[in-house]
Amino acid sequence: MTSKERLLTVLQHKIPDRVPISTYDMTGWHVEPKNSVLKDEMTRYVEDNIFGTYMSGWWNREESYIPLMKYIREKADCIYMTSVNCNNAYVAKHTRYEQMQEGDSTFTKIILTTPKGDLTQTFRMDKGIYTAWEIEHRIKDESDIEKYLSVPFEPMPVDVSHLKEQEDYIGDNGILMVDISDPICEVAGMFEFGDFTVTAFTEEETIIKMLDKAYEEQEYFLKDMLRQGAGPLFRMAGAEYCTPPYLPNEFFKKFVVAYDKKIIRLIHDYGRYARIHSHGKVKTVLRDFLDMEIDAIDPVEAPESGDITLKEAKEICRDKICLFGNIQLRDLELLPADQMKEVVRKCVEEGKPGGNFVALPTATPLNVPLSPRTEENFKIFIDTVLEMGVY
Image 1 (spheres, rainbow, N blue to C red):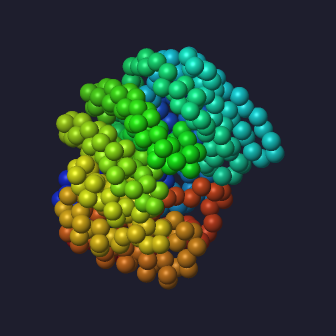
Image 2 (cartoon, rainbow, N blue to C red):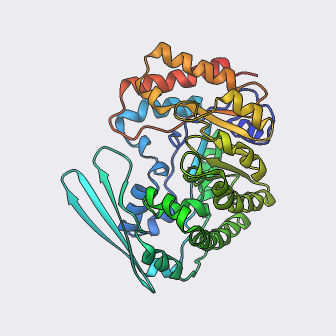
């Protein structure tokens, strides 16, 4: 099988020729879409470095990563993470940026002027680390919630032309995975996390009002991109805001299932596939995922980071959900070679039987240069799955 055939087979809950191998967003494949040249420099900086670092392909440009990226290209199966810009004309017109440098840190403030006043958020990026820390969240009090709810929705046309470029570029080496926001990801992400959990308990109807607004807008954009052929795989990442121990299951049903189930149904209506990303403890929500009819979940973290083994998850999900997981990044970064091989061996032994499994790390490195230990362990991960993963 080609990588493309292998991945589509497992998403259809059929058994491929071997266990597919995904190195998550560190794919070894990257092409800069032509429509990106139309954006101004600051917009590109914000999209690539603050909101889309994991889709910018930076690993392929860093010298210390180049040998590993070549190895990944040759041996793994590419799930090419991409996105589609979903632009609100009002937001585009009323957003401005302020940027300052302090030592090795770059601070970027984003200001959105709403009909009820300014919403501000600030991010910090440090030299040599490919992630952004949000040090000021957009919603800090009730007045900010009112500002968010006051923002008019003036949707701009969706441009998916770059998806065809990317699809042609990877060919049979893999498939596209379009990263989309679900309502809980947008809403919870605007709060400092502690503030969100408190507001969920004290102002449940307010959170639902915000989720309704986010859903209306996201559904519009998703329909537009689906009509234009986007896919075949879509990924959402908001569920982890509502898993234990943060919120009880009743909130998961109200804040996640109630909205994501409709999004998944829409994706299925167009013959596409949906995957949910949720770190942490998912044991109590696996049956909710089944109810939502999700096609795949990741990264199914084992204890202590999570609360369920791959074997236990497969017993619950049966042949209904494809499990992506569950090699911890900290193991890839720290374990000696013999222990790394044993971790991967156990992962394949638990995940492989009956199919519905893709070997995947829980995250990818953020730092430069890449350490020799991490490089060696990623190769051990790939080689061990290739050795043990044939059906």
